[in-house]
Length: 69
Image (cartoon, rainbow, N blue to C red; front, side, top):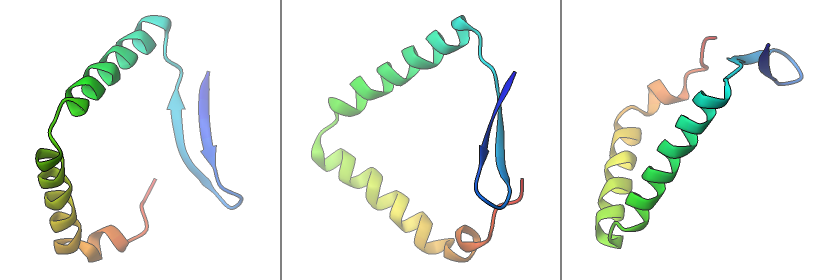
């Protein structure tokens, strides 16, 4: 069984069903990432966000294009 993300006009994306082990693995990974980020200093976080902003500004035309599914 799959799940779909649909806006009123079109199908955005289809997601395949995950079994219990896959869900547990994803949750464990998310928890580990959260703990690492939570222990990251404000200055380090700011540097990551500034880098992301720089990439977005440099590629603004690419990000503005509609996505293809």
